[in-house]
Image (cartoon, rainbow, N blue to C red; front, side, top):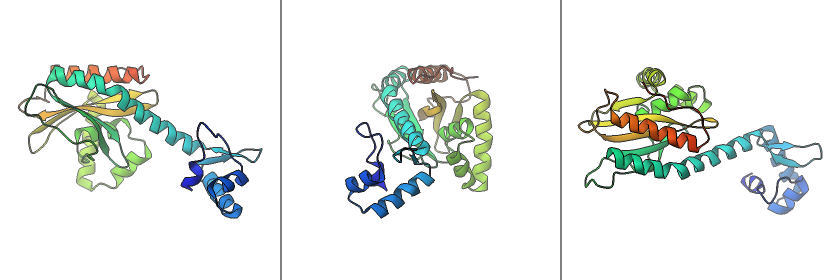
Length: 237
């Protein structure tokens, strides 16, 4: 079925079953069966002229993928400025299949020793960034499913922190290893796009007070959000 989906793009907006079979090199019966399966799943739509075009699910996935690419493209420069201003590592996370995934990291340039995290790392169910997504994307099917699959203790702790996150507009956490994190939402025209966080030790970052680091983090998130077309202001306090 992947070969069928690969037929669509700027160069080709629709295909007939015969065209699809010829292009992918399968017999027409098999191709027709695959096409109908994709229609039944809302991945493709069969028009009245008997041509197949991208359906609602495929359009949604494509829009989401473009949105992820856009946030990574626009976030780098503001994150560099944030890391320089605060002298703290800035971390951008996107929602993955069941939890946030680190998508971009900017470290402060003038420090010899920094706390950092690798791009591609899947964050824990109780991370501050996870609370951002569970707070502001609580109704999304993948978020609901992720919460349902947690053990009872993690789910209760996350739900409590998510409620607090929505109320105050940011998430704060200090781990058992002394790693401090402040995280805020980043918005685009469709809703929550990402989580932006500051990551360092608790000796450097006091997450219990609304200090200059939270203000700088919120300003940066609002800057990125506006670059993504959102008119929703950053929420703090």
